[in-house]
Image (cartoon, rainbow, N blue to C red):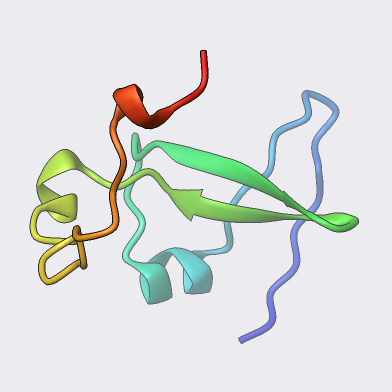
Length: 71
């Protein structure tokens, strides 16, 4: 899907309706801008509950703690 918009004189951007609906974005949702080369990646900030179980099954056998670091 390709959609365009313009930056306003107040430096605001309206997200096209097709994009909002496709991504299920809602008013008041928080976003983060991530620099990518000469552009930006726009991502919604996940809710804490959305992150639950994200690390399930991760290999924790090769972790080091602070005592293993040089001061």
